[in-house]
Length: 278
Image (cartoon, rainbow, N blue to C red; front, side):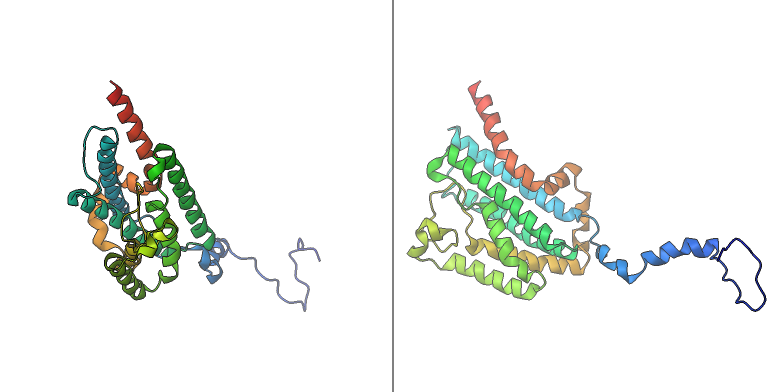
């Protein structure tokens, strides 16, 4: 049975030649191309981040910081801006919220095309919910009468859950999104004025809260973002290619938007408090 003797006895089958160096080196490459390894690979074009999306998210972050800086100036009595009735500030806030929620829909498409697992999706939702609860607690400590009980983070978490089943059905998502926006803007009922239901929308008056982002109409923008994300993905996000040349710091803000959101208000409030004391 030993393989050390190179002689072949008469009448026995010819010994099999060992694979050459060329064949041996080719074997790992062939295994790497085997269909059994396919699930490990990410879809083409989804390996890295889409820098144009990071840029858009970074712009939204900058607009949000400007809005909250102005809001904090009023909080300290430096200005008297009317954020509740002034059409400029109402429109400015609506632009920011619509931008963030539309990008949430686009991000759902990116995650799905990138091979997101259910565990990753639920982990992300858990992080957002934790941040939303932290925002509620922090606002309650600062202004308990108008604390945030359903702000933008709460809306992102719930809207993501509702929109996820439609991430591969952009036409249905677009139609449903349009219906939610129209209904949220045109229909209201006093039954939804109670805090227990006001997070859905359809209120007759705005609740006394520092940040209010009800599902109707705002979840409609997440659904619309799914349709936009699928349309962009069909063209490999080439329409956003010019935005990839934006400043690095702006794209960095977009990549870390949740962390920036959580720290920017404490930093603004603390900096203004120190500055105004002197």
